[in-house]
Image 1 (cartoon, rainbow, N blue to C red):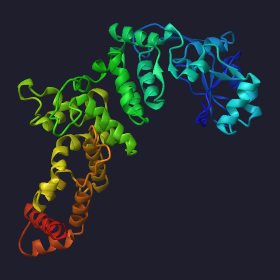
Image 2: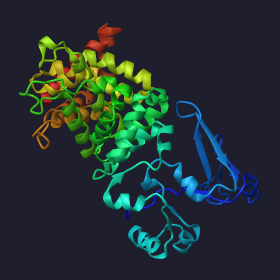
Image 3: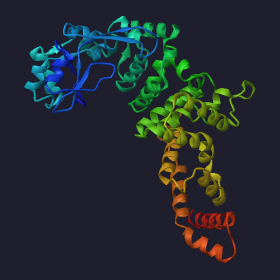
Image 4: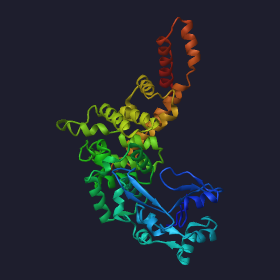
Length: 414
């Protein structure tokens, strides 16, 4: 594809574990025969086949022997575009992948260095994500991986037969056996791709999203006020927000906060739609359950909670006076964590601009609140505390003095 190589996936054919140990390789594979090269420390795996023995990711029987061919090893991989190998002699001739990507690809093609028994090159040319063999269904993580590839290679589409196979896997309950750590790992990587919405589109199309993230899946079909959301559908809005986060190069915590900021809209009573009164609090409750289930890292969880709870107030902050702004900053813990508050503002900007026709709209709330935080932080809290103590104040009363000083600074500066 002309992309620069980021890592090397070495496969050793016709060897035993002892053969590698005798050459100084270090065994590191607990479940698979994987070794580290004594000098480069890159991973070398013996060619192997796998057979599913039980539901879930760990239900595999692995067979590695000198008799396993490269073609058999490639057959166990997920997608045809990932089932292409290069003969080791050809890589050495090109200084271990150091050549320019397009020149390297041309060399491999011209020298017949590529081993492509399952049509990966043709699928790259046709921009197709296709499973290699029916063994794809043995590992439900592959559904998530394919969805992630769709978010990375945005012009690729899923082969119809692969789409059918994924639906069958979901219907048979394979996805229900996925462990939380693997789900989060793939979701996190997919959120960081070029067009995260495509990952969720693929998962939703095959029915996996409702099994993995029911709180997110139920947002499609939920209407919002056309005055504030020209796209109307909450699920459509969510996808626009995620893609805006990618456009603005947001971090993973920010993108996760974008994904979960409106979960409460999925539980709005039908008789009050398209209004969503109190959805922020419902979003926080649903978010906590989701984070516990998927064991979401604390950094992502905490940022998402603040965004879910306060994004409406931040959107309306232009109408707030200085006292209300300082209270908002306090609730966001902005004085202790100013860098995180910048992430909160970025997530809110993604929410505001992730709407039909508003992609390039300004978001003045962010610079205004950032300025308010700087004004409030300019208050010499130690000096204020000393003065408060001299006046006989203690405990919470000192906090009140500091709060009033911050309000005064914001009033004077905005």
